[in-house]
Image 1 (cartoon, rainbow, N blue to C red):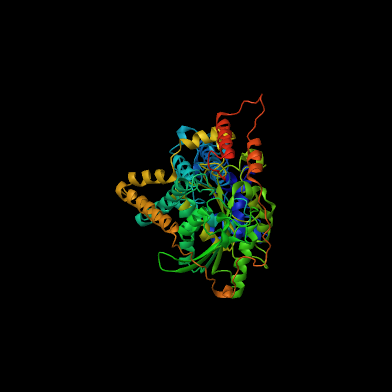
Image 2 (tube, rainbow, N blue to C red):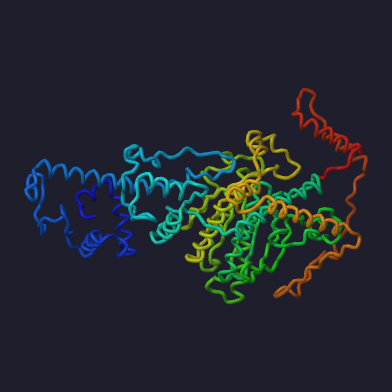
Length: 600
């Protein structure tokens, strides 16, 4: 940039400051003219550039002293053209920066289709550009990709990178080096990943695992609580992609903490807990084995030895979950830290912690902030935790605007110098890009990463709840919404990546397997698999408390029936919703013994 008169002014101050910060970090990364200028500043000399030296080593040129015999009018025209060009370039640089800062607001991250108002500073018209400027070319040397692009090309690439199915918050990070690393990775690729057909089939298969498992539970155990993953099925391919990438890059221990939502699905399809054992827990056939534990099936922990597609071993540990949301976070991190210390992994490179949060809990539970605060302290850090927010955009029956004062559920994480990736959970390939980039960031900088995966909850908080009572508009949209499996299948069919026959075979194989597992679980000859602890825990036995008292807690049946009937009485002047009326009638029949009890 040779004409400093036109480049340096009050409006370009932010641009010059950022360029100087880039020069301090890496002098060779800025153009030669700017490097010379900044070196002079740093050495305490006056910058030797036009308009900044009182005794320039070249003839001063003004409209009153034009070079080479140019007329005054020609010199004035040339100067005006340069000034306008520099001003337009400056506005382009501001446009690019604002997409980096504010592009996430316009990103299409909600699978239910809600869209925030697009910030005006993302519109070229905000900077004075018109349709006539669409093909005008500008320098994009500070942006990934070609160094010269048209205005139209610049805007299209920025929208692709920052406003598609991925929205990224990273400009709050102080380090220019970290910001530039993220910018380069995203802008050079358009924030996209190219998947091979085999990888696409694996994603489709994991989605099938999730969908078929939830459908099977709903059909075979009607009314039973499972806190299903319906609407958030992309969690399974996300976890598989993460574990495989971690394992292939040297991670040998992964500790996972999560709450109840989708936990049974993760137990069956990621942790590889035998489905027949899960089904047996639904039937409560082995209740005596749980005496003294007071736990439920969707809080159980498990461990599994995972083998990646490239043959690398990874030991997975899913922590038992306390009923209090988010309290497992520090337990999981402490468990990993203990493993790292035990095996003298003081660089924190051979283990990883994955925490799966709910959106309302991540914003609302104070222990989240406490956990984040510990994340980079020498006595507690684990090399970067992978936070996954299973964002179903509702907390039990509470809408986001009624439960938090922030734009995003993840805003508390901006206390750290880390990126926050918001991604549409119904774009599995965008999710693949995000987990790939997030893990690369974690590996390079040893910091936490946050993935805010937007999805929805197809059913109520649990299977006995009716969500249309409190969110009728939202659930009208959800009722008509196709599953992520069907959506991704349509995408692959259109791309000729899979045939419908292949997809049907994938689904049918899973249904047959679950039927076989259920049949085995209900056999009288079923033998429960005993879990043998290994390693440090080989001498631990656990089990019921043998000497605990067994008081008689029974109540006469007549008393229970009377109390249950009283619960169904409604005020005479109260007109209930038709579903409430039907529910009350069903409960009367249960109370009188005409119908089996629905324990939900």
